[in-house]
Length: 600
Image (tube, rainbow, N blue to C red; front, top):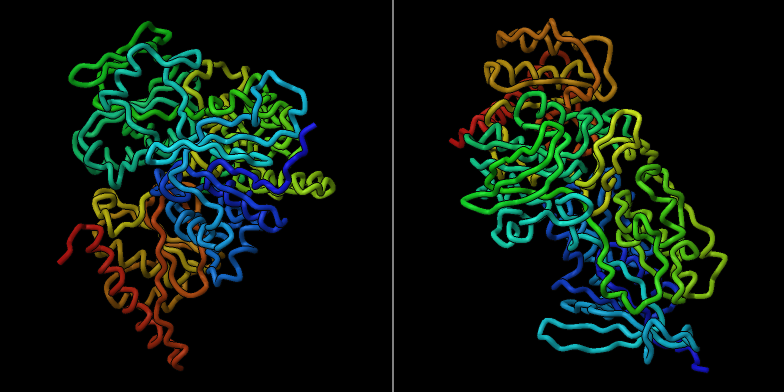
């Protein structure tokens, strides 16, 4: 009988958020990790969608054990209610975490895991199997291959590198590989309004898929349609019912995600996006562009496009695990006991129960798949879920069964996840009585919310038909003055809304009078709250004053104006209000010039 080697490290595949959280938990337990990351740095997959914001705020994206490692280093925690870009997740969280000495010593970058097995035996051998160390074969950037012996393996490598095919029945359509080789099918989630803008501007772009990444991509393309002449967008989905493509709107437990469907519906109804329902892709043909043929209830249809963006979801790469004894759910390719808990036809990200080592275990003892990859083909994963998974797994590896079995999550209830914005391109077309399309990812990779880094980097985004929402607390003074000044200065070329976080009953009479002195009449305005209709129609939200706070809304630029408050200097009455007005006037003039593209 072979003695188990508990002196060996625990291998972690992937240095993303869940992989580093695994390492943090191991370090707290006094267990040595070794982390293999195929990219050149931590979070390499996230860096590829760094221009994208997550649906979930920071409070759901920071692992507790990782926080405890970071706090003694002087790390500055982000505002927990704000929504991070992918790039911010890396720069403000993963990179500082990787710099912690204990993590840094365990990290191996440019180290691609090509196989996992047991030392001295393949999958078919059983005698003393669980006492044998694991063998992890790693190839480095220079082509060197080395076998590492480890006591346990936690695979957190994700699914980003393995998108689902575009054809029917889970298979690539004829001509799909050739179209990809020709560069006519892009990578998922390109930076359409940023670095990749020139690739798409003025082209006929097709999007296939009905998931959140499709919605994100389409919102960005909608901006190009408005601002880049000649840009045309076609969107093909398998489903027949267009209404279910737009999700839950205001009913969504994650408001940022709920806004996706509302804004997307507007782009379709306004004619900026051509929607093709009941479309099953059957072939691709490469010529000067790309001919995409699909079957529809009215017969075959061929669309000639310049580029196609896939948005059909992802699946796990199980090839490196061929010599590991896995027990997978036959439907979603998750661990067998987890599969029924995450089936997207029945569960959303907020209704999946907390689960840990006992649910994630496989026949090969001390081997686990965690994070996004543990969900297989199901797209309803949350980072918080992954963090609780690995906390429990590490407790089990440490022999603390009580802690391993006590699993808990506090997540937003998001039932609409299972009733709209479906994922796979191969979801059957259904009538209203049939099962809904599977949901796309809620908060974690690879389905976060597309947005851009800032207005100043790309004023074109807002020059035509710009929409601005001014927000103060009561919507009786500062926001109303800003709205009145913007309407006056832009002559209706900018759509202007005002709202309050806690609206009062009436407008401030001195605010009305101060604008009347400039010939601007806002006496007919009334106080109001922020509505979904406003958010669907604006590109920029500006909060005014020290007390107004609006959480980050993905897809919308957010700014804050810390306006002058003369009362702090003992100035009150109309003298105070004129000073406040004049401060806002200067800011609004600058903004109006920016939105018009005037940089003088």
